[in-house]
Length: 284
Image (cartoon, rainbow, N blue to C red; front, side, top):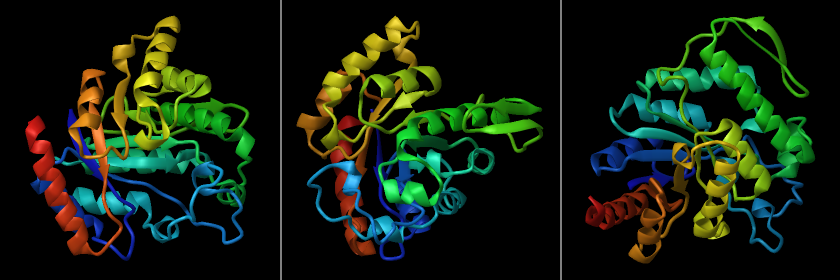
């Protein structure tokens, strides 16, 4: 199993360049940054779309631009993989996003892991002109359209939500045919259908999903759809650094586990990185 870390890269904690250098130096496989464009102050959607959730932490509206932060991390590292954990695809223009993904993948020499998600903040989506009920269909079409731009010299797409005529778009990703597309979402029939159709991996949040139970359903659905379950890489966000949580994931065939870092002062982040690096040594 590979181990990575994730954090909201904000103006109040360790900056992406220093964090990336430390993470690589300590032997972590990957560093992941989430994103939110902004948080409407009149938001009524509960955190994560979960009824009874606590107040939304301020890092959600303080986070740097995801691709700028990861590009900065790429510039000061050589082996560390760079993950979008996750990109809110429905809220982004797919033509620009395809170029950002391909550019970062080329700049980093093929180190990008493209984590995607549907999104939960209805008010944020509405500011981007996205209807919450349509977000899954929008994400699907945008990813399919981006694959056309990544893999064809002349690309076109015609759908319900994305349309563009024959076009040129470079650079193409260094990773062929494109960086792995990893869906970060709780399990369910529609989610699994999308993973099987257009994704390379699944990475849910450990505390919000019965991961070990759901992975059996994903593998069954993949087989029924004619896709080899072994072609779907498995990972988990926000795993606790305890063997009782890690060992069953390894047994179940999960390839990657991510630990959350504190949203505190740089010294606090550095201390937790050291602790986590020491913990994962037992799995080397």
